[in-house]
Length: 187
Image (cartoon, rainbow, N blue to C red; front, top):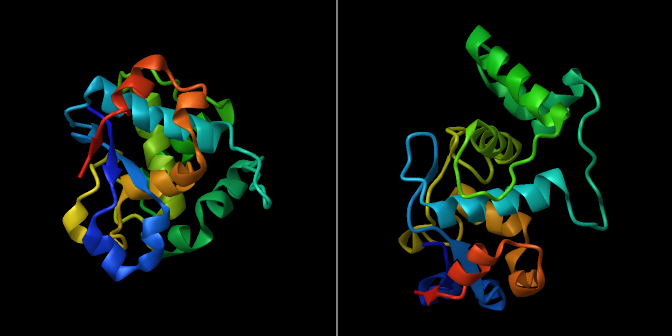
């Protein structure tokens, strides 16, 4: 079940600013391709992707999405495109991801992990690859408190994208089932 994770004391010792966050949203099991895909965990990932990528909140510096296919590489980071060995398979996958982005098929929080959800997970991972995420694998694993606040974690980065410390999910448009699941605090 998706839950609110208290910030571990070891993280606060590593970086005192983490105590200002209060909590992070976390999963019980992985979401994505070949994962357990528990409904409330999937719904949490879908909700964050929907609110941050498909309908971004107003920010001081708003990032607009690409308008043409060649702009897609700029949107996900030209450094990644240059660093990657662009095989035909990767190029085809990028074109499919770009098509999904342009069709604006945002993941709606249904709790079912479908191809749209996996595509948006991959897009999010591509956008944050290298610095914040270790792989573009179409899955979101739970945050592991042992690895500390600087771990390369898709779920940790999703928390930053929301941003969880300024978002009151109780007053948001999140589905009632998700709000109910997120009332649970754990260490």
